[in-house]
Image 1 (tube, rainbow, N blue to C red):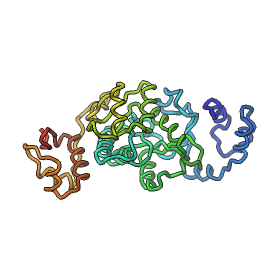
Image 2 (cartoon, one colour):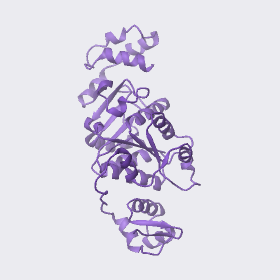
Image 3 (cartoon, one colour):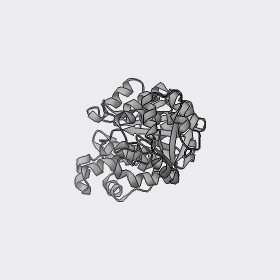
Image 4 (cartoon, one colour):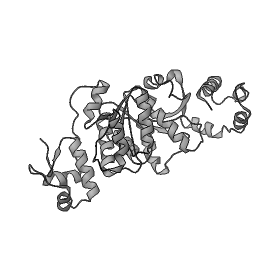
Length: 331
C-alpha cells in the first residue's frame, strides 16, 4: 500500500486503536483487495500488544531525524519500550549477519563507546553485526533501538528473545508493520530505510557486495547523512561492499571519537573500561616488541577467534597497537 494512502488511513484511525475499524475499512481510497484484507483483520494480536505497552507513534511525534526524512519515514510506527531513547543523538550500526569475530568486536566496541556518551544505537535486531551493536550499547548501560522487519510482537530471530527484553528496558523496539505480521524479504529492505532515517550517522561494519547494510547506507547517503565504514583487510570478501562505499565517498572510521565529533559531542576522553580475563592474558605477554597473532594464540591458550576479537577491542581502546611485526603495547 503506497505511503500516502497509508498515511490517510492512519490519520483516519487516530490514536484510539481499539475502536472499530469501520471508518478505515470503508475509506474511499481502498481497492477491493485492500478492503478484503482489512475485513479479515483480527484485533486480537493488537489488543494483546497494547496490554504489553505497545504504543502507536504518529508522524507529528517522530524524533527529529525521522521527521526530516519525509521520503523514507513510514506513516506510523509501533513502539515498545523507552520512548525517550529516541530523543537522544542516534547512530546506526549495520553489517552482515555472517560477521567475523573482528567485525563483531568492532561493532560492539563502537556501540559501547558511543552509548557511554549518551548516544542511542540503532540497528536491526538481526544476528551478527546488529546483535553485537545492541549488546555493546547495553554493556555501557546505554540505550539501543531495534527496527524490526515484522510485527513488534514477533521476536525474530527467536534466539534474541532475551536480548529484546533488555532492549525494551534500556531502549525500545520499533516496527512499521502490523502487529502479528511476519518478516519477509521486502520488509527487511523497507525497514533498512527506516534505520537510515532514524540515524543521524551510520556506521557500516562488514558489508558484502549483496547486503542489506548497503541499502541502509545508500538511504543514508540520499538523506545527506554521514556514512562511516570500519576498515579491514582488502582481501576480506565480507568487506567488498564496504570498500565500494569508501570508493563512493563514505568516510573511513577507526575510532568512536570521529563519530562523536560529527554529532557535536565533546567533553572528557572516553574512559577505558575494565578488561576481562581473556584480555588480561593477552596484555600480560605483550611488551614493546611486536608479537604476531599466532604466537599470542600459542602463549595464551586462547582460540584464534578470541585472540582476534580481544586484540580488536584493545586496539580500539589504544591499549595495544599493531605494526608489520604484530602487536605490542600501546603508547
